[in-house]
Each structure stands twice: as structure tokens, then as C-alpha cells.
Length: 203
Image (cartoon, rainbow, N blue to C red; front, top):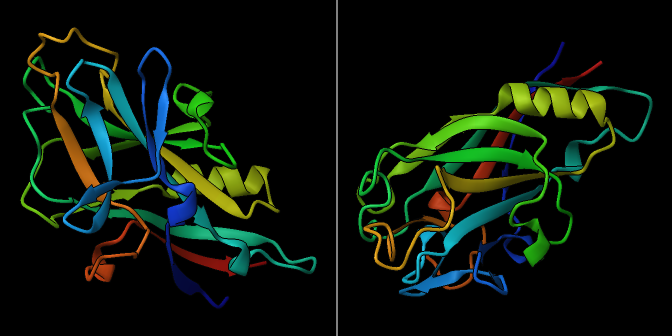
């Protein structure tokens, strides 16, 4: 058996974040000093913010009768700037959780769409700028690929939990955490873009 490891940078054009305002709003990225970032948390009015990452893995999908077997998979992210406010524990303990989802082209209806799997906790506290936050998503991807052998996109939703809207006078209002997206435009920090590292073989 020969194993391969490949790292995929998320597709900036299919990344984004959604603010759950009465009419939800979709944003491709948040511009932080020229770096393209994604937000999770709450806006100044207490509306929840969730982020989305999309990875194109078509280059490893077999075109013959072989079967793709996932051995290891890691979602790799890096903090963008400093945490704003205190989204992790201003009002009880909250963590950033990653869900495996299937949204295709991102739109506002994906804010609370059905999830395929809970991949686990990505972050329990904010760190310094470009701190790494990696999550083992092996079981989620292995099961998803086994059930969907021709899948060429892997997509995640990142959100605080608990993560509902809060009141505008809550300590959480205006608090959020940022990661770098996969969009390289305007950034010199390509090593810190959102990535999915997969080790695999064929059978």
C-alpha cells in the first residue's frame, strides 16, 4: 500500500461568513489590514456570526474503479489578528465547533442548514495573531467519503456553541474570533491560510 499526503487550501470564492440579522447577510471575507479573514461570534447588535470553509479535493478522487481511502485528515486554521471582546467566556463557556456540511455554493440559507457530522471543538480560547488551531477530522471525512465516493468538495461550518443570537446589551455583543480564509489576495501569510491536510491511499 502506498500512502499520499496532500494539503488543500480552502477556496476563497466559496468561503465566507453569514450574520444572522433579520435578513441574513453573506460576506465573502472580513478585511483585516489587507488579510482576508472569517468571523465567528456576534455583531454589535447580538446577531450570531458563522463561518464556512470549502475545499476542492477533486485532484485525489479516483477516475477509475479504485476506491479512495482516507487515513488521516486535519483541518488547519490560524487566528487572524486579536480576538475582539470575549466571545469564549464573557457569558458562560463557549467553544468554536466545526461541522461537516454540504452547501455547494454558499448563500444565506446555509446559516442554519442541516449538518452531516459534528467534527469536534476547533478552539476553546483565543490566542495571539496567527496562532494555529488544528482539528482532527479523520472520522468525519472517512465516513463521508465512504458514503459519497465521488465527492469532490469538503465543506465545514464553524460556529460558537452555544451560538444563538443574544441581546444587544449582552456581554457577547460585538465579540468575535477570526481566522484567515483560503483567499490569498492581499496577504503575505500563505502558510497560515485555512487548509485541509489529507493522507490517503487507493484500493
